[in-house]
Amino acid sequence: METRDILLVEDDTNDIELTLTALEEYNLANRVVIARDGAEALDYLYRRGAYAARPANHPVIVLLDLQMPKVDGLEVLRQVKSDPALKIIPVVVLTSSDQEQDIVESYDLGVNAYVVKPVAFDKFVEAVKQLCLFWVLTNEPPPDALQSR
Image 1 (tube, rainbow, N blue to C red):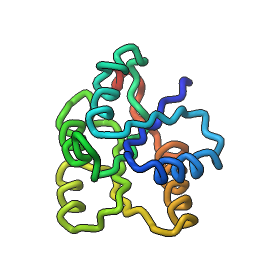
Image 2: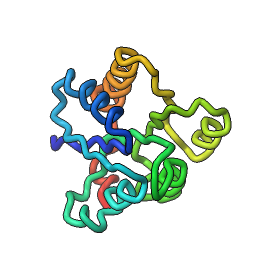
Image 3: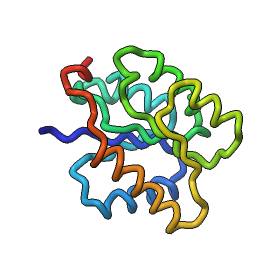
């Protein structure tokens, strides 16, 4: 079975490095694609621009920050979860925002999980490891036939 990408939508270089460090501990075969803003994430998901030639399968998971340039995470989530072809992709908000409004709106838009980034390095790495243990290694995604565009 072909492995699918993990889409990390994050603009903070330190958080990108911490996330990649956590993912490396599992030696996952999944490639991690980094989108540094919401517009780039949407280009990846809709296979346009620099991503027009990428394979038609969807990522196994989207790890989505909320505070980003160009297009914020809530707008990315809104577009993904309102598109019949994309809404089956698991999206986990991984953000520093613990604001009730962001949490409620994320769930209203259809997020699969909402995780507030821990400040401590070891807790951040452990949170990412637990997310990936479930979403990449344990969760059973829909068949690829349903995920191709």
